[in-house]
Amino acid sequence: MEEHKEFSIGLPDSGMESFLRDVDTSLESTQAEDKDKNIFPSEALCSSSPLAEHKTRPVDDHGLPVRGQSHWGHFDPYDDSEECVGIVTLPNQVKYKAVKRGFVFNLMVVGESGLGKSTLVDTLFLTNLYMDRHIPVASEKIARTVSITKSTVDIVEEGVNLRLTVIDTPGFGDALDNRESWKAALRYVNQQMVKYYKDEVGVNRQNIKDNRVHCCLYFISPHGHGLRPIDVKFMKALEQKVNIVPVLAKADSLTQKETRNMKAKILSEIHKHKIKIFQVPECDPDDNHLHRQQDLELKRSIPFAVVGSNTVIESNGRRVRARVYPWGTVEVENPAHSDFVHLRNMLICTHMQDLKHTTHHMLYENYRINHLCENLGNM
Ligand SMILES: Nc1nc2c(ncn2[C@@H]2O[C@H](COP(=O)(O)OP(=O)(O)OP(=O)(O)O)[C@@H](O)[C@H]2O)c(=O)[nH]1
Image 1: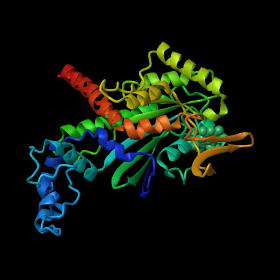
Image 2 (image 1 turned 45 degrees about the vertical axis):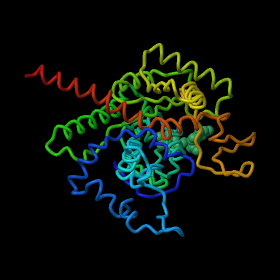
Image 3 (image 1 turned 180 degrees about the vertical axis):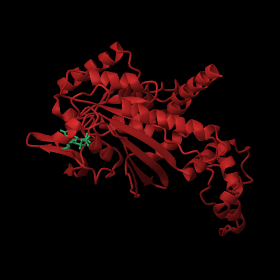
Image 4 (image 1 turned 60 degrees about the vertical axis):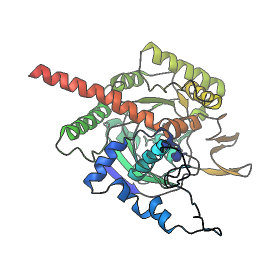
């Protein structure tokens, strides 16, 4: 089942802009693409070119041109008084191309029914992706097999466009016998690698659509004692194929001490079973203290103990997402209440490009090499 919604919303603080810090888009490949469409960089910029602006630029009281904001950051290539080559504009050129092209992110969510997957996705991206879903009754669940559903939404924030596809696995862990539950997800992830490979070796390599799964949020029940056999089985089966990010679901149903213990237990079992989860890359040694501190906090939060909610309440004059109980209020974005903010920062603001980079340069590369070796063996 595939669904595509298009709506633009403003995400006031999900920090889409900070993609651009880690933009991993090769300028050359984009230029080749534009050439195909008969658009060259200078033409692409023509309507708003600094050169065009220079020619018709209004003058000030002294007859000197009034200088507006340059496209190329603080360096203006058309300013004769600047004494540099202009290398400083390179990041801006990459940024311009990347923004023009838009971004794609494919997120898979896996976990048994009712663990808050849809609520968390809607909370993360401020969308309503699951409006029309069918909630099965208990008798339907018992007989259910795992299926794959795909929903796509275009999110626009300050001119930056993200095409988000959420791949859900309804039925996972719901049946009486769940030993094969992981197979549908593995099959889907593999199919996307195969498709990308075929497109890449095909004649027309322009505009290859990237449907590969860039991240899999794996939801762990807060009601168990660490990982269950189905959790271990799933993560072991997919660890070489996709970036797995484990999350402890519905963390508000545990006390702070229980959450700490549960997270420690999950981590120790992940180590015991040698499960490979997504590794947040190390900071650069010359990164500032604040950045290193944030990075450390993010790493310490794994597995993320999350709370999701679509209810917005007023708290100390601010509008916040929260779950309201007779005994108090759990604020989703309050780091003292849950790791939601760390998860969102990692997924969107700081490491989305790393997730995509690992998918392409490690997981897909492994698939490609294995595929080539198998074919060599058959020759
Ligand atoms: N206590 C608590 N309840 C939550 C949380 N997130 C979601 N819920 C509630 O749990 C119920 C199920 O949430 P969903 O988001 O539909 O769960 P799901 O995993 O998508 O369920 P399926 O679509 O059946 O796979 C709803 O009543 C939510 O309001 C949470 O963080 N804490």
